[in-house]
Length: 165
Image 1 (cartoon, rainbow, N blue to C red):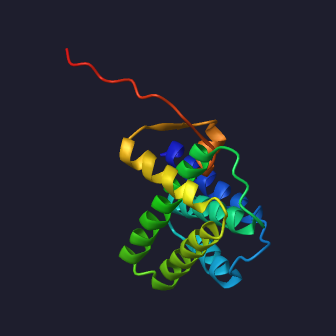
Image 2: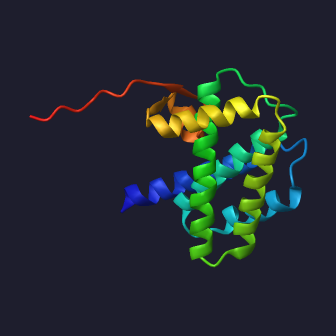
């Protein structure tokens, strides 16, 4: 029981730290960020609060950029797939909890993020790479534990086929 209490306290602390480190600039809808941040602070499940804080941090970081600076197209495309999946999963969870205002805020931030991406001169390349990743089923692995935790930087890897014995 002590281990669970410790893990819950660590998750709550990490969620709070992510909120405290949010840097909002650019064209970020402040009201939506505030609504989601309030939900995170009052969420009774510390692990869920941490998951939503990770999502909010990734969305705010992307929306705060003045322009899309794509270093590695595959990594960027995978991050977009992961972020879109996190938005969808979080919206379903919030709908199940009857948190309509928070769901609307998360959905709005996700939509705004996709609109920003569409304004990029390389959006066609990004969406094409996203489709390629989804169609081929090629897996990806994170660059580091921190990158995995925050759901950002990725690099492609080759899946090792399983053999039947």
